[in-house]
Length: 151
Image 1 (cartoon, rainbow, N blue to C red):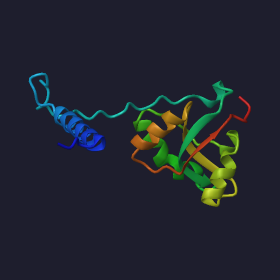
Image 2: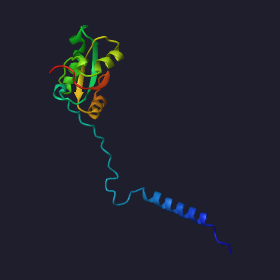
Image 3: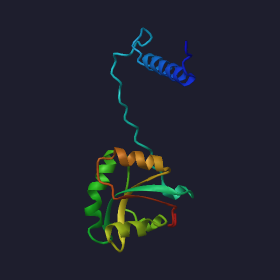
Image 4: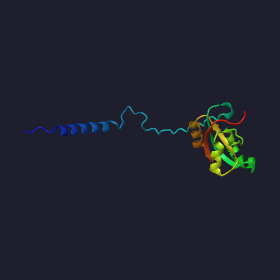
């Protein structure tokens, strides 16, 4: 009688092991008490804004609106200010030149030589990203830099 090859035996053993592992991952036993409950989706919490004048560290600004300075600044930016205020973010128009490299980035995106914007300042990229994801209004850009204007 001829002995089976070792490779065939090894392949069959491996196949049997894989099949038994796959069968065990299905669950559905008595240990699974919450199997019939529907998973609850959670919405991340709105992140806390920071005051850029109080940090020497780089921060992130989510710019929600940008206009050319002098072209109806307050009137044009007021809807963004109101929208952010309704969410608990107290903002005013501010000069992106007060954040290193922000003015250049926004000027490049908008074509405005002297941009003025409404933005919310966050201490981390994660907080800025969470805000950007949750905010239903428009976002012009997210910039990173340090505070460059006098306090």
